[in-house]
Amino acid sequence: VQLQASGGGLVQAGGSLRLSCAASERTFSNYAMGWFRQAPGKEREFVAAVSRGGSTTRYADSVKGRFTISRDNAKNKGFLQMSSLKPEDTAVYSCALAKARSILSSTQGPFGSGGQGTLVTVSS
Image (cartoon, rainbow, N blue to C red; front, top):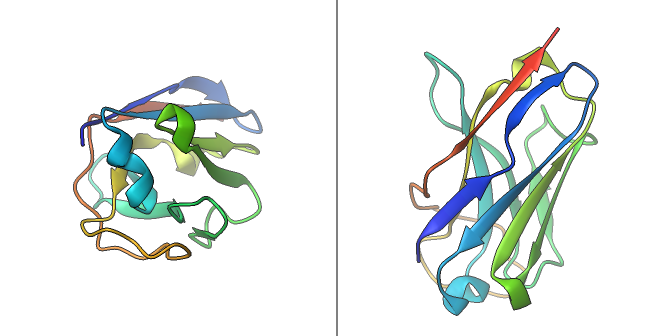
Protein backbone atom coordinates (compact mmCIF):
# COMPACT_ATOMS: atom_id res chain seq x y z
CA VAL A 1 0.00 0.00 0.00
CA GLN A 2 1.41 3.36 -0.99
CA LEU A 3 0.73 6.34 1.24
CA GLN A 4 0.80 10.06 0.52
CA ALA A 5 0.54 12.71 3.21
CA SER A 6 -0.69 16.22 2.46
CA GLY A 7 -2.01 19.33 4.14
CA GLY A 8 1.14 20.75 5.66
CA GLY A 9 2.08 24.38 5.56
CA LEU A 10 3.15 27.43 7.52
CA VAL A 11 1.03 28.38 10.51
CA GLN A 12 1.44 30.66 13.50
CA ALA A 13 1.74 29.29 17.00
CA GLY A 14 -1.69 28.55 18.38
CA GLY A 15 -3.08 27.81 14.94
CA SER A 16 -4.48 24.63 13.42
CA LEU A 17 -3.85 22.36 10.46
CA ARG A 18 -5.46 19.18 9.19
CA LEU A 19 -3.23 16.61 7.57
CA SER A 20 -4.52 13.90 5.24
CA CYS A 21 -3.07 10.52 4.34
CA ALA A 22 -4.25 8.91 1.10
CA ALA A 23 -3.76 5.17 0.63
CA SER A 24 -3.54 3.50 -2.76
CA GLU A 25 -5.40 0.29 -1.86
CA ARG A 26 -8.53 -0.77 -0.03
CA THR A 27 -6.44 -3.10 2.12
CA PHE A 28 -5.70 0.10 4.04
CA SER A 29 -8.60 -0.87 6.29
CA ASN A 30 -6.82 -4.03 7.47
CA TYR A 31 -4.08 -2.17 9.30
CA ALA A 32 -3.61 0.17 12.19
CA MET A 33 -2.37 3.54 10.98
CA GLY A 34 0.09 5.91 12.57
CA TRP A 35 1.40 9.41 12.12
CA PHE A 36 5.07 10.14 12.68
CA ARG A 37 7.21 13.24 12.46
CA GLN A 38 10.83 14.08 11.98
CA ALA A 39 12.29 17.44 12.84
CA PRO A 40 15.59 18.62 11.34
CA GLY A 41 18.49 16.85 13.00
CA LYS A 42 16.24 14.61 15.05
CA GLU A 43 15.03 11.05 14.82
CA ARG A 44 11.60 10.05 13.61
CA GLU A 45 9.11 10.04 16.47
CA PHE A 46 5.68 8.61 17.01
CA VAL A 47 2.80 11.10 17.09
CA ALA A 48 -0.47 9.14 17.06
CA ALA A 49 -2.07 5.88 15.99
CA VAL A 50 -5.57 4.66 15.26
CA SER A 51 -6.91 1.11 15.10
CA ARG A 52 -8.07 -0.37 11.81
CA GLY A 53 -11.70 0.31 12.65
CA GLY A 54 -11.06 3.76 14.04
CA SER A 55 -12.40 3.09 17.52
CA THR A 56 -9.12 3.11 19.45
CA THR A 57 -6.51 5.85 19.42
CA ARG A 58 -3.13 6.44 21.04
CA TYR A 59 -1.07 9.61 21.30
CA ALA A 60 2.39 10.74 22.25
CA ASP A 61 2.33 12.72 25.48
CA SER A 62 3.63 15.77 23.64
CA VAL A 63 0.49 16.05 21.48
CA LYS A 64 -2.20 14.59 23.75
CA GLY A 65 -5.16 16.94 24.01
CA ARG A 66 -4.05 18.98 20.97
CA PHE A 67 -4.04 16.46 18.10
CA THR A 68 -6.79 14.12 16.95
CA ILE A 69 -6.24 11.15 14.67
CA SER A 70 -9.02 9.61 12.62
CA ARG A 71 -9.62 7.60 9.48
CA ASP A 72 -12.25 7.05 6.80
CA ASN A 73 -11.82 3.53 5.45
CA ALA A 74 -14.51 4.02 2.81
CA LYS A 75 -12.26 6.67 1.26
CA ASN A 76 -8.93 4.97 2.07
CA LYS A 77 -7.87 8.04 4.02
CA GLY A 78 -6.46 8.97 7.38
CA PHE A 79 -6.34 12.34 9.09
CA LEU A 80 -4.49 14.24 11.78
CA GLN A 81 -6.22 17.33 13.13
CA MET A 82 -3.65 19.52 14.84
CA SER A 83 -4.64 22.39 17.10
CA SER A 84 -2.82 24.73 19.48
CA LEU A 85 0.30 24.24 17.43
CA LYS A 86 3.67 25.06 18.93
CA PRO A 87 7.00 25.87 17.26
CA GLU A 88 8.31 22.53 18.53
CA ASP A 89 5.70 20.78 16.38
CA THR A 90 7.66 21.88 13.30
CA ALA A 91 8.61 18.74 11.37
CA VAL A 92 7.96 16.61 8.32
CA TYR A 93 4.87 14.53 9.09
CA SER A 94 4.25 11.18 7.45
CA CYS A 95 1.73 8.38 7.80
CA ALA A 96 2.47 4.69 8.01
CA LEU A 97 0.63 1.40 8.38
CA ALA A 98 1.33 -1.43 10.76
CA LYS A 99 3.56 -4.01 9.12
CA ALA A 100 1.17 -6.85 9.88
CA ARG A 101 -2.60 -7.09 9.65
CA SER A 102 -4.00 -5.67 12.86
CA ILE A 103 -6.60 -6.98 15.25
CA LEU A 104 -9.62 -4.73 15.35
CA SER A 105 -8.77 -2.62 18.40
CA SER A 106 -4.99 -2.53 18.15
CA THR A 107 -2.98 0.64 17.69
CA GLN A 108 0.34 -1.15 18.00
CA GLY A 109 3.08 -1.48 15.42
CA PRO A 110 5.65 -2.05 14.37
CA PHE A 111 4.89 0.41 11.61
CA GLY A 112 6.44 0.66 8.19
CA SER A 113 8.48 3.61 7.01
CA GLY A 114 5.45 5.25 5.43
CA GLY A 115 5.15 7.37 2.36
CA GLN A 116 6.27 10.85 1.41
CA GLY A 117 5.69 13.32 4.19
CA THR A 118 4.35 16.83 4.38
CA LEU A 119 6.15 19.74 6.03
CA VAL A 120 4.55 21.56 8.93
CA THR A 121 6.19 24.79 10.03
CA VAL A 122 4.95 26.59 13.12
CA SER A 123 6.20 30.14 13.59
CA SER A 124 6.44 31.81 16.98
